[in-house]
Length: 114
Length: 134
Image 1 (cartoon, helix red, strand yellow):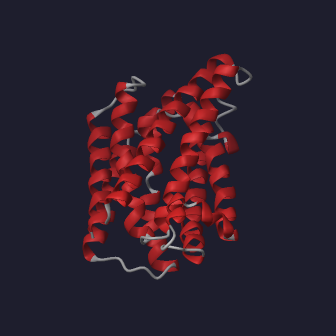
Image 2 (cartoon, one colour):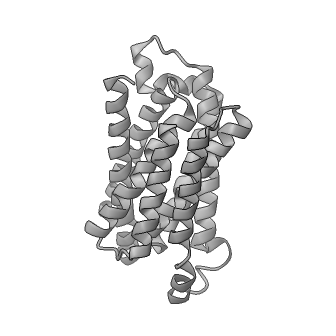
Image 3 (cartoon, helix red, strand yellow):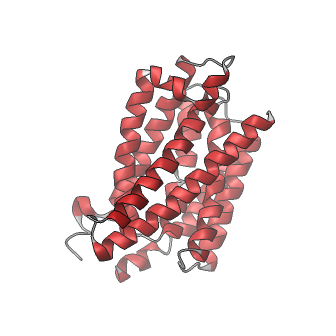
């Protein structure tokens, strides 16, 4: 795999993870303050924009690699999102949840190696 | 609270719907991307040439649907629970590739899929307790 392909996979991963955190924050905000305000709408717009970037990068990669090979890279997002949900969003992580997320990530990495 | 979370408004049902839409959209995207693949052109790295395929547009429709369900899920379920669970697609997609796209799954890949299943079971088990708290 070329450096360009690797870089594009990483960028599509980062934009996707960032979008999830921003959207979760926005939905929590909307539960308290409603949806008709600039704060909520701007966050959702940013989340959608980031997901769009991630989407088109993936579409470019799909033209070059098998889906079953490429797709699991997104699975690495499980571990990033679980950790960042605990650190940034202050969600509680149980031992069980952490082990579960680790196993899912390990499984996904195995799939993409094969 | 009780009313909003039952029936179609049940966030777990919405999580399932979101996953189903993502699963189908991934297979459609691969089909669509293959249809219009132009690996020699640099522009095609942006993926935008994929829009020439009708299958890609159907996939986009499903992605928008899954996104709406997902936003609803985010409102009620912690991200650290909802997101690992949503990765059940990482099993569905390789299986779908095998069944519908004729891609091969090696022994190692099956092992990886098994690990994901165990991890999902670990994450999903305490949910019964969480439901009571909701």
